[in-house]
Length: 303
Image (cartoon, rainbow, N blue to C red; front, side, top):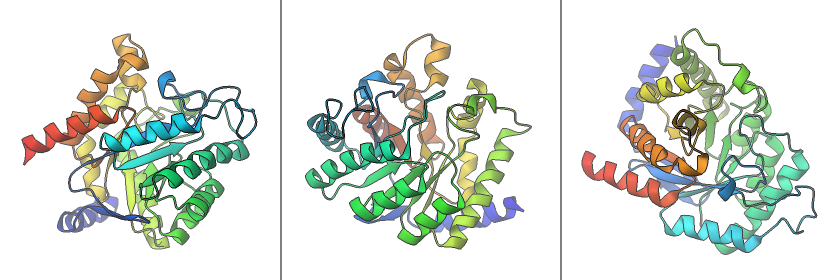
């Protein structure tokens, strides 16, 4: 059943301009764009990208909050060519500790408030799986996109539908603490396609017009499975949705290569080029300049 639905969606998708309707205008995706990661966390798996210092329970504007550092990173990302700033207050690296909803919101709100004041027209995404954080981000700070690693729930779908914002739908099993124990698949691509199609159909029925598909590299997948998904990424085009690739400095690169996340930029660049060749519309990255240059080389070669 999903195959017929996918084929129809893909045919229609090919006829329409690739774009997202955000609160700050139309964002064209015919030429791939770059999404910059802003980690408002003390425990991101890439230490140099952490924009919140421990202790995480310090006062709202205590010693761990450096507004100018956050704004400087946002300004640099925009200057280097990022089309989207993706703000997250909850690390979702494998084995990450849980963070309360109140703490996540404090982190996100601090960053959103500062960025909205300094860069009022920036397209901002909020990386959260919590419906209340999503609601408040859109209602109070005009967040443009909700980026949900969990694959969503009815309450999240309602929150996004009521606010008419684009929604990033990622493939995942379990939680950041348990996901790497949930990597048994009979046919990973068929199971992922069914997972996406059922959720896309539900979101569309609820009125969510713009759904972005994220294969979820590094989430509930072994290294070998990650590479299979990357190799076959073009198959997701049949879903008829824009495609996001979040490959930046992932363990699928640094563990086999025997390096650290900080040393994984070359591998990330190679993988981003492969993703672009296989239909990625959005590259979610820590290193904006490298990704923009990769996109430009790809675009020049493919025109």
